[in-house]
Length: 99
Image 1 (cartoon, rainbow, N blue to C red):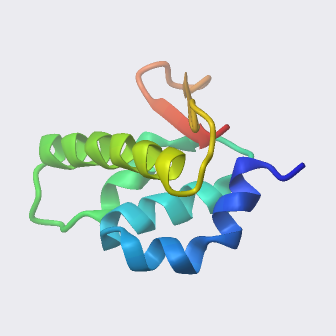
Image 2: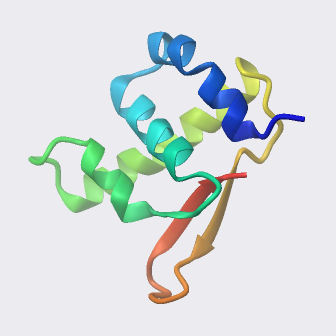
Image 3: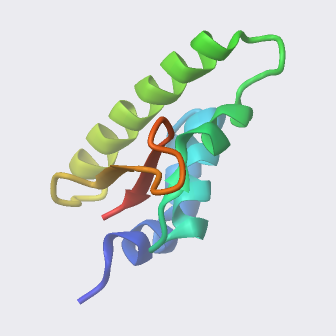
């Protein structure tokens, strides 16, 4: 049985044609780091420099929600697609990975 990460990798070309570039960049980073967690802050730099930190955080959250919905509907993955945890070294930092 294929992992969600493998299923996404196999469909990357199709996915790229259907979603926004920022969403795709976030998804690609999650796939590359899979099965490890990635710090949320590492996803923020897919957005333009002129965005404030708060805007980047909000857009990242929106992207992740959108990606989850997209992957469940179009790629037929099961919920939850992503897993979250707190960074072990710095409890303030949130981490994410593909389940």
